[in-house]
Length: 388
Ligand SMILES: Cc1cc2nc3c(=O)[nH]c(=O)nc-3n(C[C@H](O)[C@H](O)[C@H](O)COP(=O)(O)OP(=O)(O)OC[C@H]3O[C@@H](n4cnc5c(N)ncnc54)[C@H](O)[C@@H]3O)c2cc1C
Image 1 (cartoon, rainbow, N blue to C red):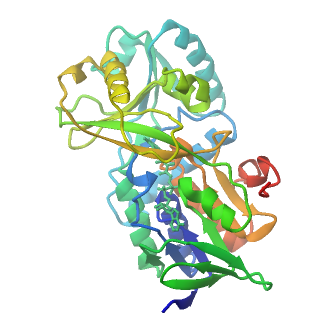
Image 2: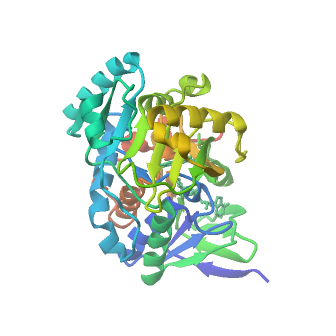
């Protein structure tokens, strides 16, 4: 028999965003119920890298949001009382051609003007920081604020901290439909329970559009596949997280990604394994990996760190980034449906932006105002938000 429950706020999705929202609300003594269709962290947050990379963000609202988010990481382990494998050893952007050097020079100037300290280094200076870099590269940039975490540890830490504050988390509980009563109460249908609430947070990642359709909203989030290779453990050679300049270009320009010049990202874990990534492909919900991608990633990563030629390849996996047309997440209330709040569409930034997203959504729900203006992130920026 389907039983009926009530919660002040229902969060749909137990990925890193839903988990962070739940914890930030629970800390403020809000009664939260998290509904997850499979298991916590079984979506994109369990199939990604863990870079908290500021250098890859566009100066403007995107970088400002990321910088606010970065500040939160300094105290997160203490606040959550959990090991999230935070490493604050900075980040490198490798420049692989003279043509990139000009574009990067401009990008770095913009970032410094925005208050992010980024240095443009020649290859001799870059190799003083990371001797494993190929001497054939034209140069690199460095930002000491770039960091990394273990995204699975962080997601579970958010959820466990939320549960300690009273949040209920229901796994294997897909939301199948949402009704709205005349008194403004939503009724969520799941196989086991009917749940009533005045406030829904849509944190369903690449599935956020399906949740939107249940309440008549058109949400422009598309899955964008990223494939990652995992090497066997190697002696420590890379402290920093690393991306190539082409990776940043492909992030913002789908045409560059589709042309095959999509760049790479890499990080060496505490255990010595490298995570080498990653593609940016629009292939629907297909999470398989391909030989073409493996060859591409190996060719580009070994050109940047030649020692990787000796690495053994252990396995590959793929995750789906929740892509939005302008690269910004969708955050905040939907005016046509005031009890319905968006927290999705973080593309390749959801790990880095998870603490600040949770904080902002909790402020919005409990205080009605946020410390960062959410207007640039509203759903209505794409249209009026209604299904056509
Ligand atoms: C290859 C790759 C590398 C990346 N690297 C980085 C990085 O280095 N740094 C960074 O910041 N970001 C990175 N990202 C991006 C980051 O992983 C995502 O932005 C983030 O994980 C999105 O989190 P989410 O909580 O929105 O989505 P998800 O983790 O997918 O969570 C959504 C959850 O909602 C659940 N759900 C869906 N529908 C329903 C329903 N009907 N009912 C109940 N539950 C439902 C799903 O099962 C899922 O668990 C990367 C992504 C990829 C793919």
